[in-house]
Length: 404
Image 1: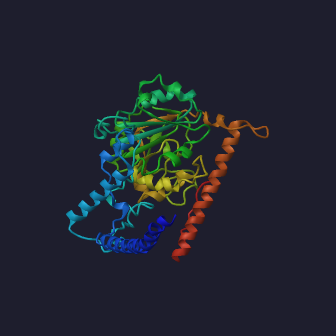
Image 2 (image 1 turned 30 degrees about the horizontal axis):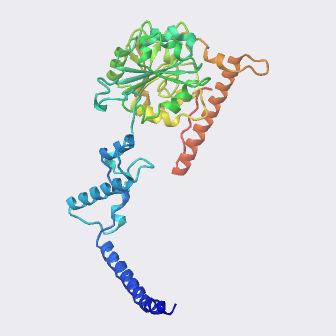
């Protein structure tokens, strides 16, 4: 036992030296690491660019590529970009992107990557994206449809060339039954049961979505098109510089306003005479600057304005026709009726049957009552909005009244 004491004693004398050495090494390491760290500039992780080869890692679980390897590659890329630019950022602030002119919510993106607009063109799931669309439609036509009007819509669609994208809003949920038509295979189908045309328009025809189309047709389903050709219609709209228009209506059926009545002695008309007292100004609706919401056609610029005026909760659009003039100037010159290409309103109350019977009333009666109520609500909102604006500007609002 005594023979082991010297060994124990030597260990006890060596321990303080080893501890001191460990402390010194640690301090030196920290100092060295600090100087190494400050010798590299700060790099924002948001500026790292991941190459397509890294993206493919997501698809290849057996690649053996680790998260550390991805980051190492990204840091190297960032350093190379910085060296190629020959400049060093002074702080994180100079690296931050903020572009106030970008669309709301995209201010932190470089403008070159912002894709504000889209379209309704279907694309392939394979191949080169640049080759997805051999030809692109120039115009868009939409119909709000139920299966009972299938044959009528088939006749109508045939009046529109391949220059038109076809979009059907299905209010009865029956979509697959349209597959018998060849054109239906290239059409876009949106199905939400028991909704009206302007409900769909507000939700699916945002101006940034339909921006690629020069003109947007937003039509009902009960229109006879025997005397209509869409390409000829577009030619006349361009000739007379109409931003908002509609085809003339056959005068013997489904006619409400004199303005929309077809005239056989001209290509286009922009004004009319109505019943005494209906028009406070010959340049205002319903004597001018007026088309109905049954079969309107909008230029892309006019639609951008009109879309913002459509109220989210007012689904039938009644009263909108009297306010369209707010979106073009001068309205009595840029809103008109195309007489040379005319249609027939067949007055089929198919959407009315999608209503609900209440208090002994037929479904269509409840729908019509809602339409009238919405008209009044819309007029009130327009009037109040006008009044608030003019008061804010400190000017007297114009005294304009319309037919109720």
